[in-house]
Image (cartoon, rainbow, N blue to C red; front, side, top):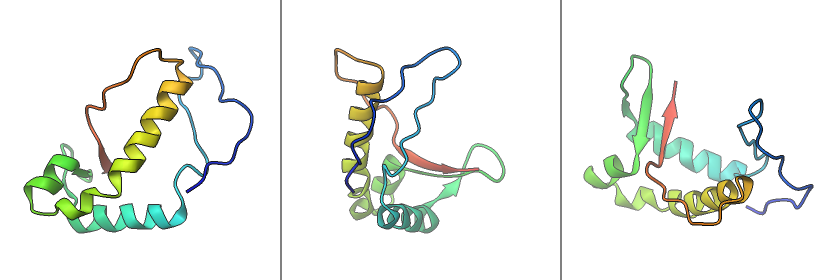
Length: 100
């Protein structure tokens, strides 16, 4: 799951507020997350929306399925802090998978 060192990330502007990180997740990690989502996803807040959240996994006795999320969440938080040049630590309020 190594991130290739390339040019510095783009700066945020009003027209560009999204950050795409090609190769951020390996295909194996994507398959693992897809398995968790297909196994434990629940109906979301709209028809045809399925979501999987960490509290749901913990509450349903699937705590062992939380493990892939933790390092990904930390790496993603670090990437967001770097992208926005944060001088403080961000707090991750929600971690989950949503499929529309």
